[in-house]
Image (cartoon, rainbow, N blue to C red):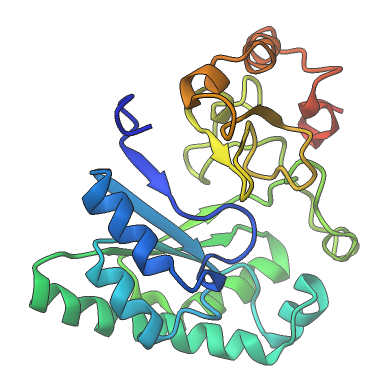
Length: 252
């Protein structure tokens, strides 16, 4: 992919990136062996302890983004279905990240950007989120808001019961939202699964967005496969009925 001109690579896809015990080695390889100008990660922060952060910063990571999507332990447990006490650990790790990043910067000269994203809710939930953000605001370089994505029809029943309505499609950041059709991601992003499939969607949890198999065909061949081209054509025509994107709330 680097030889084809790909300049940015994110070493995560669904799931939690810090579950990978050899994450620092992967960053080192992508940055220094492959030569990617920009290597980035997203994490919820629960496993991003100072001991884990130091080697990934030293390996050359360019961007680390924390997904900060719930206001407190109770909400984290009820909506995300994760043990509530992990929320406190997540906040503690985010608060520690800047000091570790700055120490590595002084030692190596390389500086990784630190970011946090949150879901822009309205009403009481919006107020709770903005209050929670004050716990981490001074520890990252930038905080930005995202809409509540439908996530290819994966928004949980718990979220819907709260009265939180997902936005249409993958529209980017709040303040710079794109039209849901055509979806920009199918033209600019490739997502590679753990077993080497090229997927068209960042929310492909069940394989319906698979566009090629990189264990048997080159990346460019899969990127330009008939099924991928047909999906892009459907997006350009603003009619994705009958495609893997049809389940997304944007197209109901």
